Amino acid sequence: MTDRPAPVAAVIGSPVGHSLSPVIHRAAFAAAGLDWSYVAFDVAAGRADEALAAMRVLGIAGYSVTTPHKEQVAAGVDELAESAAALDSVNTVVAGGDGRLIGHSTDGDGFVASLEAEGVGVTGLRIVVLGAGGAARSVVSALGRAGAADIAVVNRTPGRVGAIVALAGTAHAADDAATAVADATLVVNATSVGFGTDDIPLDPAWLRPEHLVADLVYHPLETALLRAAAAAGARTFDGLGMLIHQAALQQRLWTGNDPDVAAMRAAAERELARRAGEV
Ligand code: NAP
View 1 (tube, protein in one colour):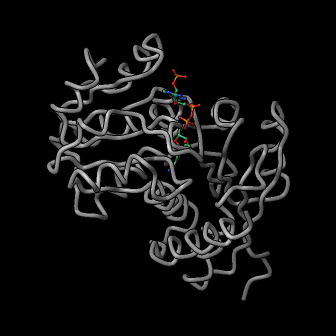
View 2: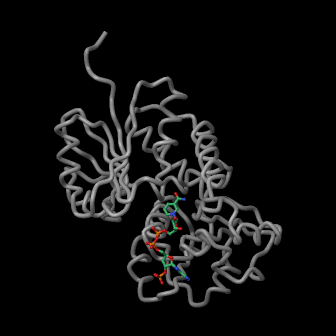
């Protein structure tokens, strides 16, 4: 018997109302039979330091961190894990037993884990990453740490590519997008192209049956890129894989347990279907 209150974790962001994190994490706690609460706090831009102070005062066990707080939280925690230090960006805060707040970034490692869960190892793989925003940064950094042989980066604004290729020793700016796709086994869309639209971030004629095609966009779940890839005979990976596996890594950091990834994914799919029905 203990008189300590049941642990609380939360997502902080703004806006945060559409975050899938509460649904995914509550499913994980329920499946594990853990008496944890998970709530969403809309924290205005620039007020992440106060949210960290609240964490200490209220004894909150963990935060998921989303836009616009990832950089301010990285500057405000007591310690950064390797994943977050490389990016100067935090998507997970863990309150240590000694009261110290540790910042991690589970997005990129979650992407790698989502592929591994489907039997795809990235070690030695040739990869092309489309995009150079926050998602691409975390993915390139994690792919580099996981031993990808070659990571070609393509972005609409070429001037942003230099900062991202510095995150992994095997990353470089692609000379030409078509050649980079032809030379790669794994094609990753880390742009926002296709989010809520039928737009596609590359010429579908470049895709071959040998390609593995991953889209980080998960609204819609089956993007125009993934449809084109499937039509070309390529194997596809949707954006929910990364979302679920980055949350699974958060669960491990907070609780020390391996969560039920299938239950987390099923809950997210139900919620996405419910929202689609609302429109
Ligand atoms: P971001 O920082 O705003 O970066 C957006 C990227 O998309 C930039 O590289 C941008 O190029 C490119 N882009 C935007 N519009 C474009 C267009 N019309 N044509 C070509 N390129 C275009 O966004 P982010 O946070 O990296 O997120 C990117 C996507 O990943 C979003 O759809 C987000 O929902 C998704 N995401 C998924 C997960 C997951 O768990 N599955 C996690 C994080 C993000 P410029 O540099 O030229 O502007």
